[in-house]
Length: 147
Image (tube, rainbow, N blue to C red; front, side, top):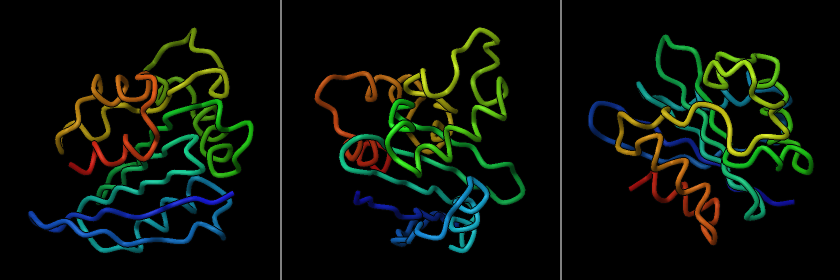
């Protein structure tokens, strides 16, 4: 199973991308640390695996990380998606939009915080629409966020 992972980092008004290795990551905290290792005041870890799902993890200085997974069902087959889904499921309703009736993370697609990139140009509704649009690949979602 191959994946693509990079951290998009903003310093002042300049962005740069750094490809990263997630091979040693065993938790969401490990993913966040990989992002924090790249300098910038805003860091966005983007992951795409086998055209099945996209993961966005936003790490701002001094704030808790925010995470979005384009397809919760990917957690049944992909270890990176599973570790994020399991931890989001444990965090519960704060990440899942406060919906007490929300199904477990693995039954919900997409899930997480769709508003995590609103302030850099991709509204939550657009992100969710990209996930729901038939024929849109996970890398297309990442490209749309990057634009």
